Image 1 (cartoon, rainbow, N blue to C red):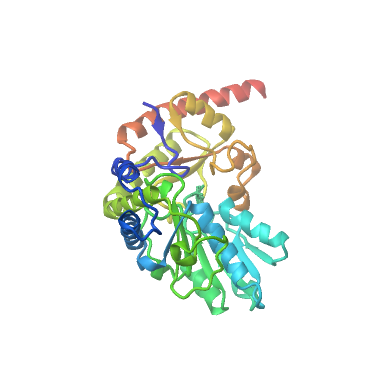
Image 2: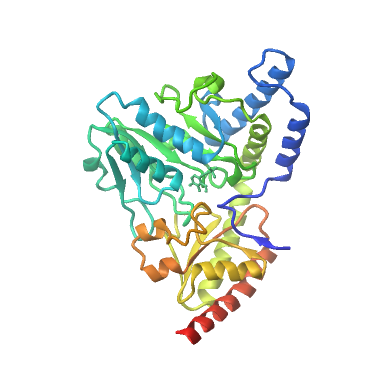
Length: 385
Ligand SMILES: Cc1ncc(COP(=O)(O)O)c(C=O)c1O
């Protein structure tokens, strides 16, 4: 069986979730906006899922808006905040250099449309450097968007401190928590933000479903016109079956947080320390203390990350060079570059991301195969060069 260690790209749908989605497709025929029995049955299923998602992040159900995933939630937050405040004097959007493309490219698109933008730098350990924020964020800031966990390094960001600083200047605060929700405890009140994005396929729900949490009372302009679904915040008929799946995945993630996370972290740490010990020229990219438990980003001196991913794939081990959205482009990671790492180290990086189904035996197999593959690639590179 191939070994799947790319859970940050997409985590397999959990069995209980798949069962619920299949049942929902068979049994829930109605449109949740219809007044008849079938419509009300669909609405009640959506409401149950809304409560489960709210519980996972310490929110009120009425604050959850279902979306087609993390990208839509990010767009809704960033564009909604920018447009909601456009008529006023606040129009600056502040974000960080290590955001996922869903935020970064949205902010850049608003920049080309005329909004002033500020992009915060990060330290070499992959943590957002917000020391300049109090001076950078003036009275013109509409929104500060900072991710909770980076998708490539897993490094956790100082969201609370940034939120407090941004709020002191009257800006709204959004966090892209797509890589954190389901992996670590997330509490919207403790984070002190106004908007939070999450995505189902990162924690066992199907692809194509997610949510934006909108703190009650937050002014956000709906970015799409249409029906009055989701309290007028997200037009379009709801994907009832996928939303039900998201609800089941949220409940499972919440129940498993205290058991899955320590087990996954122990496997990740064993893998990491054994590779550091057995493969000379290996380094971990990003701070190792404050990370999500499932992720490690490693560079292997004198090895092309892309070649390593392909060679491991041939051995039945799936890892990646970074974000799935930018892989295949051969563009060096914008996250590792923003951390100021040397070009060779960026080019030689791979991301290994574990999940609830990852086993000890799978980690043993990686530890058996990966050092040999790195040795082989180095020998080839050496004979060429
Ligand atoms: C941090 C982060 N934000 C947003 C997204 C986009 O989410 P989705 O794939 O659900 O659109 C991803 C997906 O990789 C991500 O890692």
